[in-house]
Length: 105
Image (cartoon, rainbow, N blue to C red; front, top):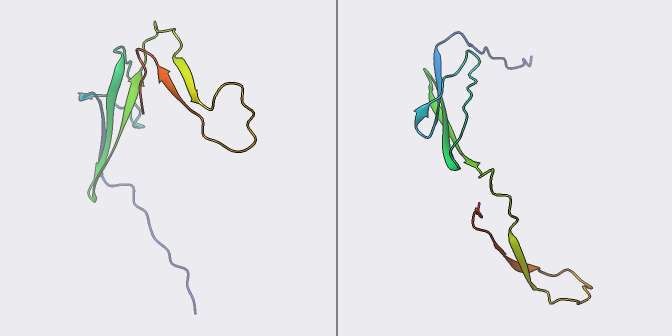
């Protein structure tokens, strides 16, 4: 006789969850949702942690707030291929991008 494996998942044990932005605690509601308003331009470190009797796990991300007053487009200069050539096959396109607030990922 072959029986199907089964398991029971318990969710009645205690657990905790927390979140921070730039090292400052973010209050979480009963669903684990928090809200923050980021007014400072630049990168912000976001860390979320959940813990229970089995251990804990942490996730992190960086959120970047751009300057809303920066409306200038970046300057793009394609350096290859040359101007006015006919492209007949796959080829690399290279160039430069410049902007005072350019951010690389």
